[in-house]
Amino acid sequence: MYDVVIVGGGPAGLTAGIYAARARLETAILERLMPGGQAAVTDYIENYPGYPEGVAGHELVARMQEQAEKFGCQIRSDEVEAVDLGKRTVITGSESYLWKALIIATGADPRTLDVPGCAALKGRGISFCATCDGALFSGRHVAVVGGGDSAVKEAMYLTKFASEVFVIHRRDKLRAEGIIQEKAFNNEKITFVWDSIVTEIKGNQQVEGVHIKNVKTGEGKDLAVSGVFVYIGRIPNTAMVNVEKDKAGYIITDSDMRTSVEGVFAAGDCRSKEHRQVATAVGDGAAAAMSAEEYIAGF
Ligand code: NAP
Image (cartoon, rainbow, N blue to C red; front, top):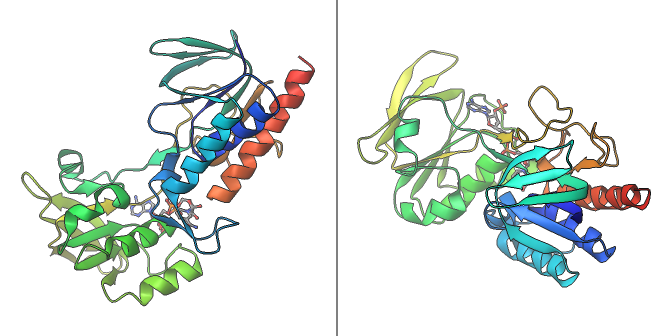
């Protein structure tokens, strides 16, 4: 029996772990992969307060993990298979964890492109992580699909390796924030391909190109690239928990991170909200842990 079980070890979960463990609550974070979540594979974070010179994502989350463990938070490598709200139990492949309060901080996974060639060539030139795979494309041409912060930031990162980066976006305006756009427009290695969607990813053993279609003119053409990096948004990892969610599957909470089920809280990117940043995830995690502490006090 734990006071607090936190599912997910990204910035929201790690911050909840710091606050809960520091409040002397018996706390465990269950993380299916390495702690750190999406932030851990973000090359450089320039807008996290306290780091005017920027900080590597993996370094920031390693410090958060160290801080959580310093206060006694247990971080377990265990994939959650089910959450039994009635029995207050989280079930993994090997164990059952009983909780007094549960914090869901499971984040969201990358959305994939639903076009011919995508499933077959995943890992053979199609990637969802420039930080992980960018160096494999040294001197090559690559495509990035999407027009949000992730697509544009990662396109810039890829210019460290690739000789040319095509950013293929379905509209003629980026969703990415202004300062990120400005930097990308000034980067000579980036070519924007506007109003276009990828209709096929081509290649036998490895990606050899993409077929794109201009959504305004209907015109189609091939683009020779060795890699395709897909950044077209995310899908929340919330299927395992039966609390109230919005249409897209994000968990609905009040401003103190309480879900529709008593004693169950949600924090970070898996929560229904407008802004998804490391700084907002950290705020959610702190609030969720403090709400959990209040809840347990009346247990
Ligand atoms: P996002 O903001 O949802 O952007 C997704 C992009 O993919 C949009 O440009 C969208 O086009 C496009 N798209 C969606 N479905 C598509 C499809 N089927 N085919 C082609 N294009 C498609 O996702 P994100 O960039 O992953 O960012 C997620 C959150 O993290 C955001 O809140 C973002 O601000 C935050 N973030 C922040 C930073 C930072 O450094 N500040 C870095 C990364 C992420 P439309 O624009 O036409 O909808």
